[in-house]
Length: 114
Length: 117
Image 1 (cartoon, each protein chain N blue to C red):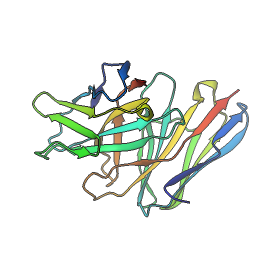
Image 2: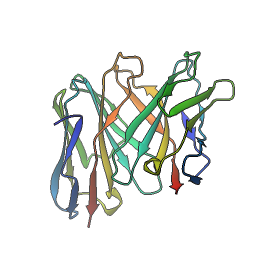
Image 3: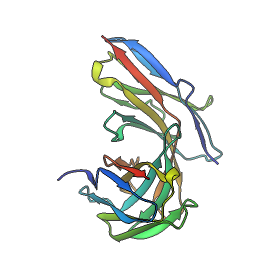
Image 4: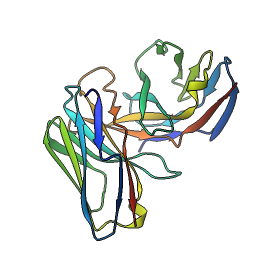
């Protein structure tokens, strides 16, 4: 595997379910990110982790719970979601301290809440 | 607060023509970074090009170049000799510092580019 991978690619869940999204990066980066992309809205940053420590929570509701056990893995735990949480969830990684610190994205998880 | 504005919701361009995608930004920071990403229908965001605010030369990466006009706060993406595979959503983004060493990105709403044969 290379780059940034995300599983599952598609997820349908009911409002009372609990599920988790997984992200893994094979780039040796130290920072990881979760973004939400809703229809007709710009990408929104949700969480930032640097060296496994959360450095940013962009006012995300508590029904989204991130976990970063190490610099290569990032999870997003979901519970009691709402239909408006249906979106494409993108994970990214980067290497802080480099010139551009450009973020590399995974393919995303398309989430539908019914 | 930072803001990215992309004023072209959609564009149609003939194959092999050059295309310019507009991006203006607003920030009070002196040091910042500007990025362009491509998102095909598959959903993955693909990094194209980066421009630092202190870079004096416009960034170039293959067929992509960034026309950086700092005084006008614009960072337009130029694609030369467009190809059918260039059809996608294109997003301009600005880096901001989260304080913990890792940076976040603020994105514009995007431009849907369609290359016609």
